[in-house]
Length: 120
Image (cartoon, rainbow, N blue to C red; front, side, top):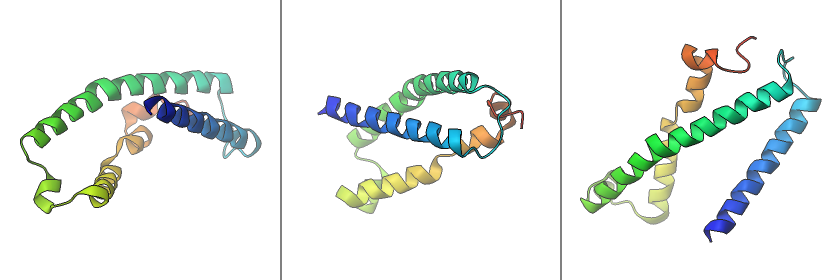
């Protein structure tokens, strides 16, 4: 089951990446100052560092916290009486609303300085 999920996720990632390369090649939104290979290396390195950071310092403590909250019988879902599909949808909407990381990479000067498109 898990390996099937990984295969679907990897296939989807590779397909979307290929589609974005195709679109960028034939319909670029702006001219690039750096070579494509440099941008790909930078983006791949950033993705690897981000993945490791997120798994070690965000996901692992968050999973431990959610297990503890569930063990203590606490949580917003318990208070509001949410369960099943409604609980999942509410959680997804809330997490999507709270996810500011992508915006930070475009607006916070520290992150923008290391961006491959910082020169435009």
